[in-house]
Length: 132
Image (cartoon, rainbow, N blue to C red; front, side, top):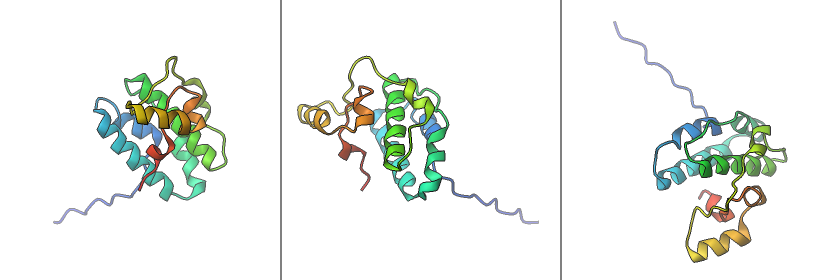
């Protein structure tokens, strides 16, 4: 007797799931996962997107990335005309962080970091958050 093939239904990645995936990996892989999340997020209908941000993600083991996720949640919610999830308001850095730490990247980030990132001390230029 043949076993039925389990059907798998596509579900877009949530920030909660992204945080789990960001744990214990190197930064280049983290950026690839963030790019994947952003790609999936933007393909979803606007009325579904808020649910992808709503649940507070567990810590990644690195405060910088935890705060970046909060900034990302606020930034994406604002693009859709919504307030940030409540959990995001409690995350901020005490010292500025420049994920791309070259002289030109720092200058670009100071000028072009989205407000949700700047106010939390995460300086990443908006074009770094664009997915091709």
